[in-house]
Structure formats: structure tokens, C-alpha cells
Length: 153
Image (cartoon, rainbow, N blue to C red):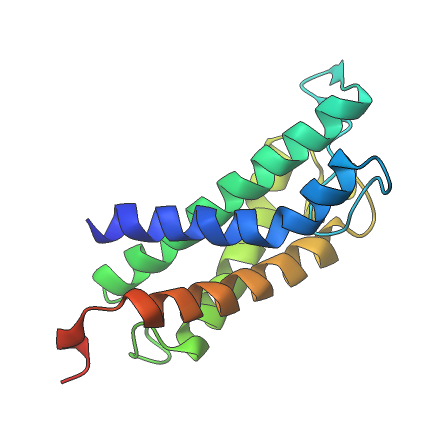
């Protein structure tokens, strides 16, 4: 149940972070908002203008959901070796940093974005870093709100 809740909260936080991009994209005022990776080519297929935003938003939400899942995995398996403090802001930032490294050095090259996403843009590494920092802060706030009462004793 914790995995489902954390994945759902991660997706919710990702959606909340993406709201300015969604609103501005829908109003046709601003294109290529930061914090959403602009995916121009997917598996050899050149994406159209609307598809770039849709795939970028989908990728952002998947990354957000996976971060929530990975954090709870670290807590449940007691892999928080540095802090040993589950659901603390420091442990969430450390796991977000590790997840950011995993994304940029392993996942992005595997899906064709190149090291740290350079094939999709020179600032993808920074966009994902800021996104993961915001994700960890907002997820920490949500977890504090939804944390069961027996965690406080």
C-alpha cells in the first residue's frame, strides 16, 4: 500500500509542478517551458509540436511517479544508510540526488537522449535537477500531511 500511495503522490506532485506549463501551453502563449523535457525525436520518429509537449509531460509524470516509488523502496528496504531517518527532508533530497544521477547517466542514454540528456537539449540535466529538488520538497510536505498518526509516537 505504501508503494501505491507514494507513486500516486509522486504523480500528483509532478502534475502540480507541471501546471504552469500545462496552462501556458493550453493558452498558446509560451512554448518549451523549463522543467519539462522537450522530446523532439522518439525512436526515430520526429514528433510534431503538440506531441512534443504531450511526450514531455508524460515523461515528467512517469519520472515523478518513479521517484515516489523509489523513495518508499529505499525506506522499506532500509537503504537510507546516510541518514537512517525515513521521511525526513534530508533523506528525500539524498534519494532525489541518487535518482537524478540514475536518470541522467543510465536511463537517458538507454532511451536515446544521450548522456545527461544532451541530445534533447543542453539544459536537460539542470531541468531534471530542479525538477527533482522541487519533487522532493513537495513530496516531503505531502508525506508529512498524509503520514499516519502512529509515526509521531
